[in-house]
Figure 1 (cartoon, rainbow, N blue to C red):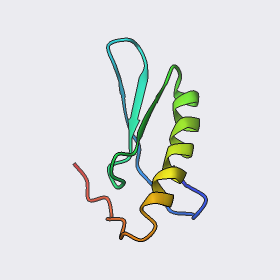
Figure 2 (tube, helix red, strand yellow):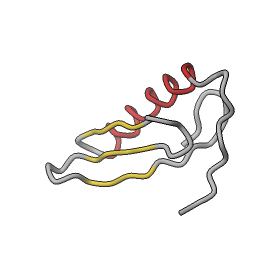
Figure 3 (cartoon, helix red, strand yellow):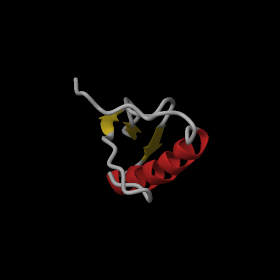
Figure 4 (cartoon, rainbow, N blue to C red):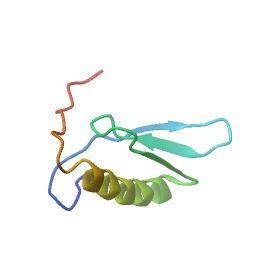
Length: 67
C-alpha cells in the first residue's frame, strides 16, 4: 500500500473468527484496522497509516525485513 508520502507499507491481512478482515502494518507500531470486506479494510488501513505517520513523524520508521 502506498500512502500520501509515497512510502510503501506492507499490510498483513488475516481473517478473524467472526469473518472480519484484520490488517496490520508491521513497520508502524500499533497500526492496524479491520473491515467486513477487503475494500473496506484497505480504506480503513489508508486512514490509520496516515494517523500513525502523524504520531510517528519524529521517529525513524524501520524498513520491513520480512518474516
